[in-house]
Image (tube, rainbow, N blue to C red):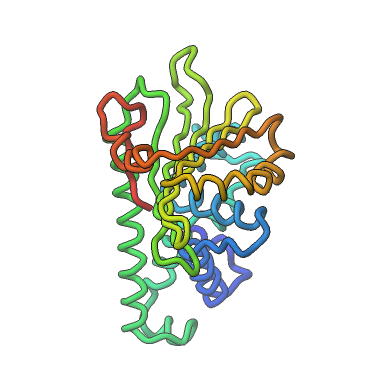
Length: 276
């Protein structure tokens, strides 16, 4: 993919593609900043979760299916031609493959095109290799541990936060297309964060039939009161996207403690624990 992407983009120099790939990879690894409008925070978080490389082949297959890809002749429709460059430019995995392809040039070519010496090229090439290896191990875990009758797949993420030492621990539950009849098409998110003044806070978020349910679990009643006083700051920006937003604040040390254990039971749907 990396070599084909470079060959298909002759109007841009190796330097342009190199800088673009590094920028996209750096953006994916950037800490999440909450000191911005909620729309920008949501967009960055969506990028961290969806474009980290793990789902690249799945998204590629979805594009091919939606565009009516002709497997016999290997032809792409106009729709695929439009969506494919967007996927390649946004997802980390093809950018890592592109970076490796560029860095596989001879030392003299790298010096001429990029102005970097062989040591820097080797360092970057190995770093890209390690990141790709990490992504591919995650994909292998998904294939090995997913059960056909389970309605949900669980992905775990560690999200670095700007101006905060401890990362946010995030679990995203995806409803499977092949779930059994009667099983709800319910998207779920659970997150755990260590806040300097409020202690450990867990938030469970689920969307079902146009209603968004947000449950906060905190360690003491004083913290719960602070959250309840600011419920509208959570409900208001979400109201435009859902028919109803239900926000509850509960004191439960046990629920916070269960964050790491509840998905390890073999009876739990989607028992996949990945770190991205």
